[in-house]
Amino acid sequence: MDSLESLFSTAQQWLFESAVQPAMFALGLGNLLETGYEATAWFMVGLIQILILLAVVGPLQRWRPVEPVTDRATIRTDILYTLIHRLGLFRIALFFTLEPWFDELFGMARTSGYGTFHLDQLWPGVTDNAVVSLLIYLVVFDFIAYWTHRGQHQIEWWWRLHSLHHAQRQMTMWSDNRNHFLDDIIVDVIVVLVAQLIGVAPGQFIAIVALTQLSESFQHANLKLWFGRVGERLWVSPRFHRLHHSIGLGHETPVRLRREGPDVAGPPQDGSAPLGGREAEPNVGAVKLAGPPQDGSAPLGGREAEPNVGAVKLAGPPQDGSAPLGGREAAPNVGAFKLGGYNFGVLLPWWDVLFGTANFEQRYDPTGIRDQVEQLRDYGSGFWSQQWLGLKRLVGRA
Image 1 (tube, rainbow, N blue to C red):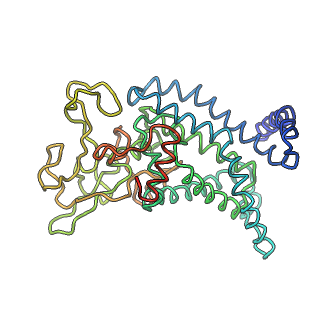
Image 2: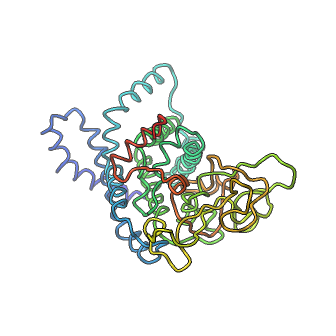
Image 3: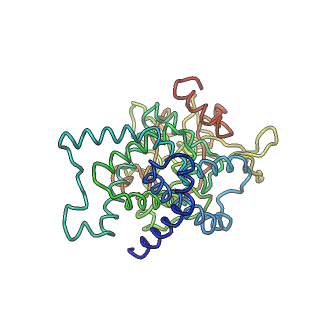
């Protein structure tokens, strides 16, 4: 660990002194050299992440893809989001807009006698070990990320922003940073506040963010991969997270109607019994692939149709009480759908298991949002249109 930190620090110092510092003096930013040095570290971490994606995750996608790549334009937009975030451009914008407010807030707290609590000092000699403290902080941040993620899905106005992330029908390793900037700002504010409250060292904070981002990129990969019955419960896999992005399953929950008769649970957690332990109705909420589209076009993001695979049909209870689209009997007490879903864990599936939101079915459904299929809702095809439509959704204009 120490040797890696030393190597990284040496490279950071060289890059800063040879390129960043001269540029900052030339631009009249000599008073911000300390910030420039920190930005150099973020840039290097992002560059390392991108190289790993290209060298490791990219070949894995080509080896075992869930679906063929047919919409390269939307992937190029996702790459733009990735470069903006991973190379530090988004953080530079936050520095000039929000960081002065944070400095003021934390300065007032310290002058009022509220110091920073250092979580790694709970057990001197044990928790202050570099590896142990890193793991402790990683678990704490992941717990916060789980509940933040649930908020993004279950608070209506927040979902209007976050839905941009889920509107990607061609999900790849570049899709993690595809999001509305207001949503990103909210999440970053929460992370910075938590980091200050528990006293994370700057170097550890960078390491935690880097590991989290790299794992998230891997989770979004167009990769047919799961970690086995045990591994799936230890770390979030591409299969686990793809279900979270699945149309009609990953980000909505069936609403149960109040009526007589036995209750029927939603999608199961492990392919057998659902959350409540009862047998699951197999076609409630999921996406079914039915016959070819009427106009002869390719279904689901432009993929070529197989003989009996075509347009997207959303399963779940029909409006007239008849059998659902898949032709099976509808669950007797499941009505409409509400915001919710499954598999909110960012790194660790533990929280989904603990709080009853895990779904461990080994399946790979189409990704996107129900209203993209049923109502043909537009979430934007390019960077600026996606950001603009997100603002319009936020105020109820789109």
